[in-house]
Length: 313
Image 1 (cartoon, rainbow, N blue to C red):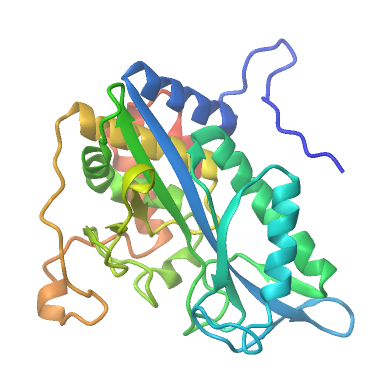
Image 2 (tube, helix red, strand yellow; image 1 turned 120 degrees about the horizontal axis):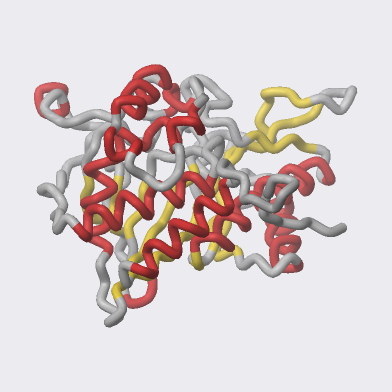
């Protein structure tokens, strides 16, 4: 079996303006021209559901295990192993896999890499997971909120940034993303269901950041050296990774070029904070309609070298 990635062109050879791989490639060239190297790594969450007697998907979880559980409660170990071995055969390096918070929910994380191959790997990953699940008599569901009242599926995006001197520029890059994230939300969370997830079970709701705090929109994990990075926790698997990475590059570079600095970190568990505190915080859009309206009004999005607004139609 062969998978092929390619550019999209018109019959006369002209590049197709909505080719999302080309859009990302142009964004990486823009970053390089400005003297920055941007690396991405994704963390995908997904549910494993049982099939019915006809082989059709159900909403019955494969197990009732919880976060970081192991066998026998965690029944997904062999499926995740099958997925990871298949990824390795395809030249994709998974770093870890484990059971997530929801019943039948799993997570597999990738090693970071350059933007374009990381986006290609994200597309490959979803296909591999669905195929491996079916081989094991299961259905893999990547939708943002498969089960009401249970954890939603996120596509956490880890980003590290360095300048030509090798200096870490992640905080300035993060400041740019925080400044533009509401304008980007329609691309990072592109379905109505996406907004059922935000604000529940470790999914962020507020435009905040902190270190080692999973209730924030962006957290700085406790990592050192080459693994130092920021983690954006709002995107979900319905996002186009090429468009998402491209927009994050442009937003982050804008922050660096404009000399932005991050706001004061919010070192509070926002899921346990009272409303008197959280009501003062800036919030992500509460619906797809609101997110699209914010994007449509964005002069910054309109200034980008591709028609971002057209991607929302």
